[in-house]
Structure formats: C-alpha cells, structure tokens
Length: 161
Image 1: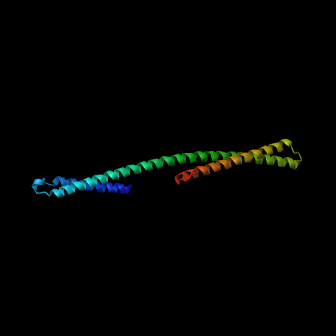
Image 2: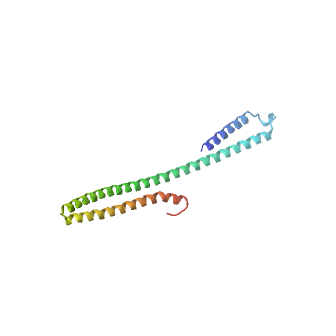
Image 3: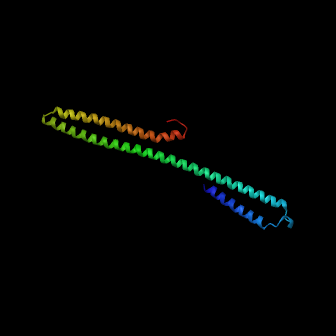
C-alpha cells in the first residue's frame, strides 16, 4: 500500500512541475514550439491517467482489506462461540468426574466396612454413565472446534466444508 502512496506522491509532483512549466510557457505566438506544448500536455494527460489508475487500485485494495477484515471478524466470533461451548463442556466433565470420585470413595468405604448399599452402587453407576455422556459431549465440542478452525481454510483453498 505504501508503494501506491509513494507512486501517487511522485505523480502529483510531476503533475505540479508540468503545470508550472505550462503556466510559464509563453503563447505560441511568442516563439514557443507548439510540439513541445503538445508533448507537455500529453505528458500531463498521461500522468493524470496514471494517478486515476493508482487511485482506483488503492480503492480496490481498501475494499479487499475491508472484506478480509469482515471475514476474519466473523471467523473469530465463530471460534469464540465454539471455545465457549467447549469450555462449558469441560467444566461439566470436571463436575461429573468429581461426583464419580466421591461416589466411588463412598462405595469403597462401604465395602471396607461390609455395608454395601445398593443405593450407593446405583449412584456410582449413574455417575459413571453421566461421566461417559459428558465425555462424549466434550469430544463432540472439541471436534466442532476443530471443524470451525478448518472450515475457513477449506473454503479459502476452494475445497468444500
């Protein structure tokens, strides 16, 4: 982008020099070479066209950067949502695993004292089942996070998601 700005500055300086030279040039009746005037006018026209082209290119680049920025913001938002969901599932998994540990500890103590309670066994099995469900949900969230990260890459390379 700095190359375009530099080119534009150089073109503007050249235009200013040509314009200043054209103003200082006496009328054709004063012995000025009409071919030189025509050559300077042509150079001025060329410089103006080059400036317009540079401005158009600069506009196009700004538009592309704006679109790219919008796409990156969209992607970042999607990744934040996925990360939040993954974090929630991990928190739930930690809670369920803590419950499972507590139930297993109570079950071990009951076995050591010889007072095995069917309700404790049932609680332990339910906690283990919930732990498996939560683990599955966490794995699913991890896969979704990975897919959310990969999908923009596939789209940008022309693949399909």
